[in-house]
Image 1 (cartoon, rainbow, N blue to C red):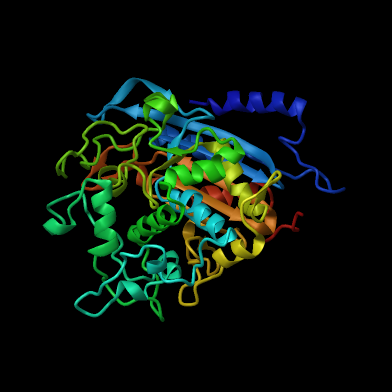
Image 2 (tube, rainbow, N blue to C red; image 1 turned 60 degrees about the horizontal axis):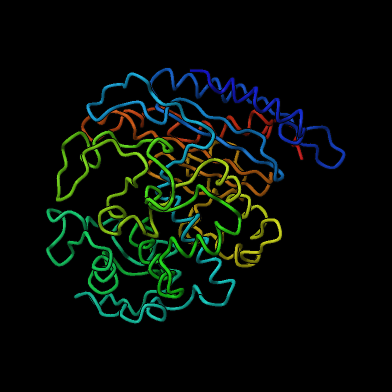
Length: 437
């Protein structure tokens, strides 16, 4: 159970070699206070109560302050029975990032394209996807949609569309083939409501599926190739990729945190052609990504681990650079972090802590904090006020599903906010304390 103890020993040994790991001295101030036991005890307690697995990394001023894992990457079989030898989460376990894909693949690609002058967010989508034209009966026209509308979730699309399931879409929208799905999104899928103006954002996977296609059209590369060539390889990130079980990647199922116990059936209550029924491990859970986009989509499909996420979040804290590589400039990053007037929790894709209404930021994140969450149980909080990034990766869906609800959903660790709160409090970065650097 307490394998974070061994990681602690490992970190102590690391600290002997590199004192920056556990206590970072900033200028001439005293070392930062970090009482991390509170966090460990809280998560370990939830693991003992039944939460499956979690991995947490905290960086501050560019240093890793905490890197800990808890519980199991594989705990149940497809009969919802606890297996004989559950497999522990390790420091390099890879997780299905789900909607964190929208930020750390698609948004990073888009910011990079803006930096190169290949994309302007104020342009119509049609400029980059010529076939993106035509109107709904209600005269809602594709030509009017701007890149920015997709980024702020105000283009007017439904939150999701079950392209992969013939029972949930009309025949002309059914697709389990990437090229066909792309054609449907670019030329057939209708809008649910008007665009932009004073519309409140309505979070939609479709917006990011389409933004992924924008990246592909501009660059002539699939989204996975674009981010691999232009971002991940430049940082030597070996564990951040799409479709990781493809034979050329040298990864196997046991390298991953498992998700749903019965594929996409929600405990055998959902069926459609080709539906998976096995324990998912190393395959993207998201149905639109897996069945309709072959795992390569702008909204879901990316996998990563703690170390790689600490580098990816650090790029933002560094205003677009890492080491000697510049991915985008600060003014472009600031543009993507601009609050949307009618709902300031939305930037361009990024979710912002502006009005404290998103509970997953916890109680103490600054007004300038931003981040994103993923359905599988993933969350990142980036807080420039404190030069801090927190990534919490969990496999909360790797639990029995009863009446459409996963057991893992009831725990605080899978709601993120409590853990974020504890991270700030363990460093005394909360309201009543004299503020640390």
